[in-house]
Length: 449
Image (cartoon, rainbow, N blue to C red; front, side, top):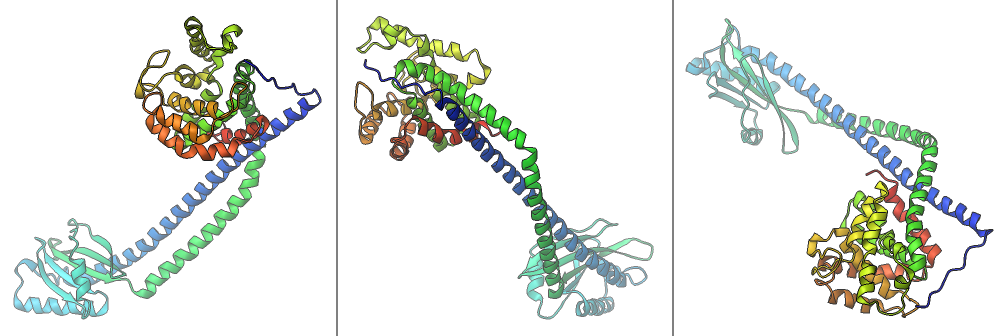
């Protein structure tokens, strides 16, 4: 097999390349950390604004409820104490007397006044003229009668108006429960408008204050995080270099360029995103894509670089690169997430693959994903022994082998996005692919789990 080797970079270019790589890593780390800081500041702003608004709204409604409760206590005193009647056996004269009292309260403060006996049976009702519909609407709700020593109140919106229903126990002179007073009070428009205006002013003040505070905190937090940003950039660059060096080590032996590793990682990443994988799953998938054939570093050159077809015995040796790759990964806990791709990407959906002959969803998802993109890139790329295939031809191969070699669901998903992805990167060289990939990877390797 003819091979094309890349010329080594000159010594003068190497420091500049390292500086450029570090600069890209720093920018990628900085962008991710800035986004996280802004997101958390925004969430804090939203939480504080919502909480304070809720508190203000609660306090305002509590003030109205307190006023109505005090009014109900005052007015219900007319029916309590020495003036109390036995509501469960009221006569005509007492009824007329109580109705006059109730009507006075309706004319002054309440929309509706009702009296219940101690068994909670309605004995008397007075309704302000023109408010019958409000009374009917309120009666759709079940009363919550208070205990002997307590009162209850309910808040309702009826026809766009705020209505409070208060129930107060009625007692005779000795203090025995004789019934209940219910007053339905409508918050007047002026009070309701005042609540809205006060709420709006408070919310505006809180929003401006928190926004101003957040704007002041942002540069302070960034200043405190400069060291973290640089450390994150160094760690990200180190992790990426580790993946890159291991992937490149075999790429330099097995192919003419390391750009294949970048392309399959790009395709793999985009397919993982289309599936909605978690950040942890994406990190494992990316690492697996970089290191998928790392075990080939242990395969002898006469077999690895043989230009013709391998004999059955040689193919058995070639298959051992899977075990070798797993052994390489076992030396690093950080690389364990890549094992699914390294160990299982030669399995086939119908069970005819190697090493274990897994079938269907027995094959780990990351391995099923990578198997598709690996074939796609191999066929659409120019190699010393072949010209690149057209994208539609490769898609035809994937669809033909869907259900036998590949997961049909993943094939259907990938073939929808593959033409656009191929157009996006097909003309990029190795350096351009590396520059494109770094910020995409950064969001997963720099963010929290």
